[in-house]
Length: 470
Image 1 (cartoon, rainbow, N blue to C red):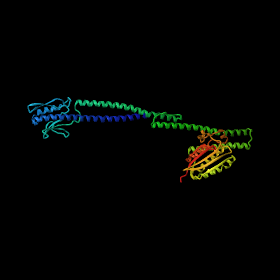
Image 2: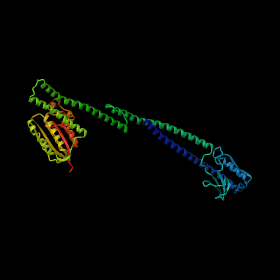
Image 3: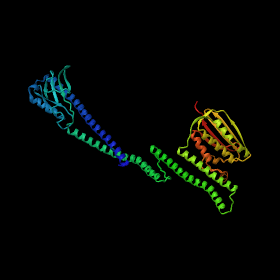
Image 4: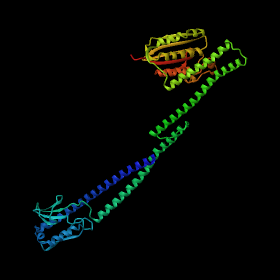
């Protein structure tokens, strides 16, 4: 079963159970309250009847005629059972006739049948059943502030009269009709709610299948403000990320092919020239061929380093080390080359303590940064290397002189194969991977690397590391 009928049936059954329970409780409570209401009416009428008997007893001052004359007793009981506006006729002083009224306004005589009882002063039954239940409704009959008898009524625990039953049936039908209408409304609400939930789910399911098939341009338009809306927004972010990664992969392959094709084309042309006798295989030709081979070798090594980083396989041996010593040794290895390029290195390295890092990878980081400045800084020029500590963070900056980098391209220089001046970069042997490798190494050390324009007109790269915990 699909999710739509599951949700619809679940919500509808929940509404059905709740409405059914409400109908049952309301109907049961209604019958109980109606019976209690009728008993209260009967009790009030019983008090009226008792007052009539008090007037009769005040005239004859005895119940003997009722005890000695069963016919009169039956007449009083039968007339009292009618509970309508019939007239109960009894003798006055054994000779006169007096009228008593005992009315409940219903024309049926079944309600009080066998329930009315008259007791004398000794609680002996004069009229009614001889077995007295415990829950009698009793109204005393008084004469000269003395109880001379009791008029009792057995309460009813169910409905007897036709008018009561008809009223109860009418209320029951109205209740069932209301329950059916409520169930119909609940079904409509369940349908709307189910559609509101299952609709976005179906859209997400179709979009997911599109992603599986490689359609990374797929997006879902769900405007819900609930969890499904948040899920759809996360889905769109995922699709956008996959789309960007796919484009990056395509660009990555295209850039690799382009970078490899150039030195290979030079090697091929050089070898064909030697083979055709156009060019002699002398020292100059050998140096040219060696230079292109080195370019290919450097590119392949850089690609290998980045692929290891992507796979999480780049090896790091983290130890507590003195980063100042590491920077100083890296600078010393470049002194001669910087001197030849007429670039002055100025350092301001504070004693900042140790960090937890891989000495080989950090040397590679600083080497790439020094190499980057050496390749792209005009001579005569300068490079300022500063290191200082702020709280538990170590900041290292490499700021060189002209030429600089446009503000718009600063965020892209750590992208793979990105070069500000492509022709110049290729001439200098760069493939645009050095700073990408630097970014990967810094990330592996839980640090940060940023680029900005230096105060000397060139590029400033700032690297931040956390101090090793003491």
